[in-house]
Length: 505
Ligand SMILES: NC(=O)C1=CN([C@@H]2O[C@H](COP(=O)(O)OP(=O)(O)OC[C@H]3O[C@@H](n4cnc5c(N)ncnc54)[C@H](OP(=O)(O)O)[C@@H]3O)[C@@H](O)[C@H]2O)[C@@H](O)CC1
Ligand SMILES: [K+]
Image 1 (cartoon, rainbow, N blue to C red):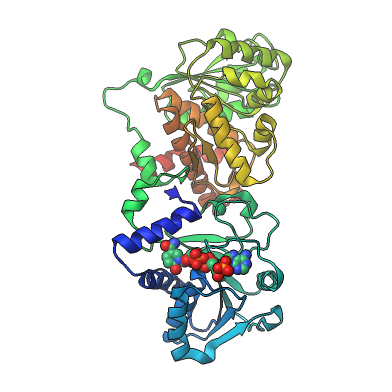
Image 2: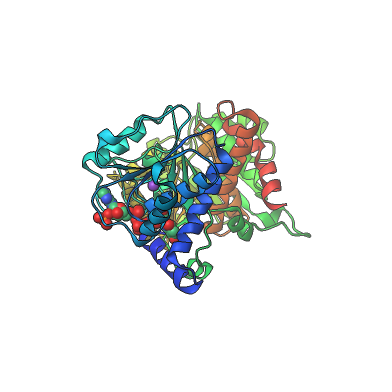
């Protein structure tokens, strides 16, 4: 799914009005009508509604919702915020209609003292500002935002299109924003919903289709995308009859050190579970029995050193379709030096994670030696070590995209919505996964998955998009069976099979 900017959403709106054709008043009626239907589906008439409206089209949506709920017998109080701006035309249209029938349900608020006392089980609808927010919210309007947020624990807050105060495409850090339980957003995710810094504001996001022009959507390009199952089905490559293990590639995994062999084992298991034809693991001598017993499907090459690896560059040749390096590897100087030599000779796209990334952040010039098309998988701290700090999440995404272009790499920044920067500047957010995956070993599993997919001749872009998706999907299945608390990284691996079955069979 494409993620459009606020300006593009306005264009989509105008394009739809001109080409469907539909009047803007009717489009608002259609969009807000969907919100009213959602609200009635989720809250019976025993819930009194308080609908707060600004004076633009977001407020107009609020007026349509009020009319529909009142027509259905709901108890509704409409609170119009009188902050002096000129009302939009569609707002005026729906205001007149509401005024004619339900004048007694309308209140004007021009000061925070006008904020109503809310009865138990009230539902607050936030229709103050949407994508038209054009300056910081100040004065008594900020006071109203804070008052609504004060109700958060007692009353449900549902934001229309966007939580008021949230900017669609830029950072809203340290500004007043509604903290909604639910956000009913039209047609698309907004970039703001996917940023960790906004975790507290949008609540559960529900995308309501409102029939914006498919032609506009298809032909308009964007930097940001959210992955979905349809996209994955175009990427997935079923195995073919008459194939053999050679068809699916020989991967080399370089991982593990004394006390961290678990990371290597998790990566190896995941690599095999996504279908790599053959896997060899370069591990320190202390890990030999551990790996052989834990994963009989993997072959082992032991380093000359007992506790960490420093001679893997001697192994890494063209026999291997790809290499995954980093989980539990350690950052010893001899390991770093072996990585440097490996990067000087191995030229196929590879997967670089964990301690291998930490080595790159100590020797940043090595970043330029990483083969084009390789996949880096930093978590936010590793990302910062590699590329420096950012003032906010939007700046960090811009940095992600810029570095992916500069280095011609795929950079997968881990998070609730893992963001994948691509060499062409595009950024894909992964839609699967859950907080149960915030546990040691999850990243090692991802490295194994990505390595296994590259081994099978998925292009780096296909591997990184599908790998992030299937990793999160398996994590979601694990959480559904076991709870987010009880699941471990090993459970992600156990659910990879079901994930493939559900998504592609
Ligand atoms: N996508 C679609 O296709 C559809 C979209 N629709 C809806 O339209 C919404 C966008 O509507 P919009 O463009 O009228 O902007 P909106 O968010 O109502 O804000 C404008 C108002 O806010 C004011 N204002 C702004 N910032 C302020 C501040 N900090 N402090 C104080 N005032 C501030 C501004 O005042 P002004 O700057 O004019 O003085 C003006 O009064 C969109 O989110 C969705 O809900 C649907 O109806 C139909 C289909
Ligand atoms: K809103």
